[in-house]
Image (tube, rainbow, N blue to C red; front, side, top):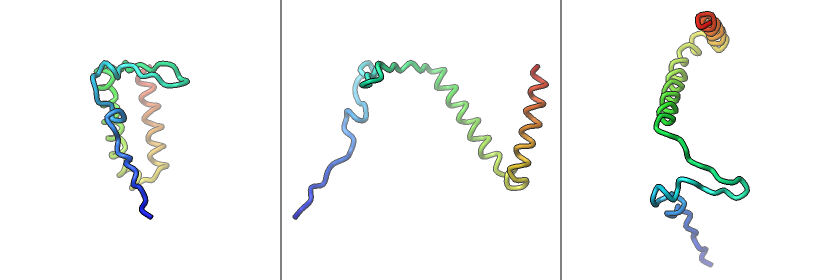
Length: 88
């Protein structure tokens, strides 16, 4: 008996092809209306935050390797206190 192979590849509707106007507002059953209102400046801030977060993640590797998590938390605590005093 031969089994049928189902095609699970995305269709045009799944991917969202079409004019931008038809995708500005989506209706979700039970949740009302969702609007896409992110502007260019919002996307820029998300990108900047992602870059800073990735840099902190990669940059903290040597600190964790040499001192362990306790030293990293201790240093972060001291620097955050200094920054708090500086910005008051």
